Amino acid sequence: MDDAHRETPPPAAATVDQGPPYAECVRCRKPTEYPESTKGSTLCPVCAWQEAERTACSG
Image (cartoon, rainbow, N blue to C red; front, side):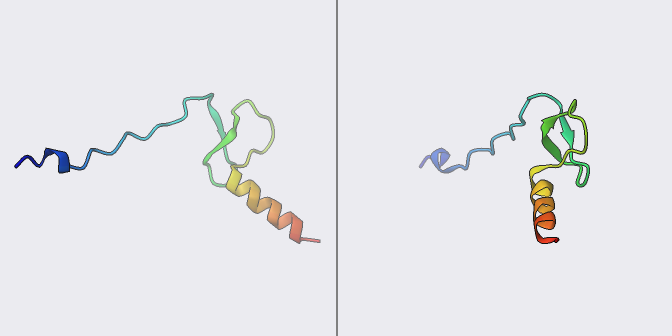
């Protein structure tokens, strides 16, 4: 009996977006959606969302 069809295929290699060099988040150091040439403080989507929640509730 041939068990070759029952083998689990190896996991696919993780693909990395090869776009422009992205700026890192000023809080968590993860890549952002902005290029490195962006001026000012850059936040990743998660930190930007948390910042929006903080500023919306303060008042």
